[in-house]
Image (cartoon, rainbow, N blue to C red):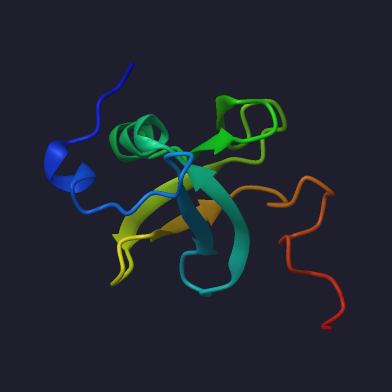
Length: 111
C-alpha cells in the first residue's frame, strides 16, 4: 500500500466514504475529460507513478485508467481546489476517456 504524504493528506476534505472528487482535464486544450473519485492511496499512486489511478465505488477497488483498455492518462500536474474537496488532474489522454468510447464523458447533447 502506497501512503500519501501527510502534508497533502491534511489538506484534503474527503466525503463520508473517504473519497475526493477528481476531474481529469486534457493538457494543452483544457477539455474536461472525465470525473472520478480518489482515496488517499489512489492519489499517492497517481503522484508517484504519474499514471491516473482512481477508486471505483462500484467495484470497491483501485483502478489505473487504461490498464485494460489502453486508454491511459499520463499525469502532468495535480491541483487541489480552494476548498480542498476536489482534485484537478492535468493529463495527456491516450484514446477515448469515456468507457462508452467517446473522447470525453461530456460529449452528450447539452441539457
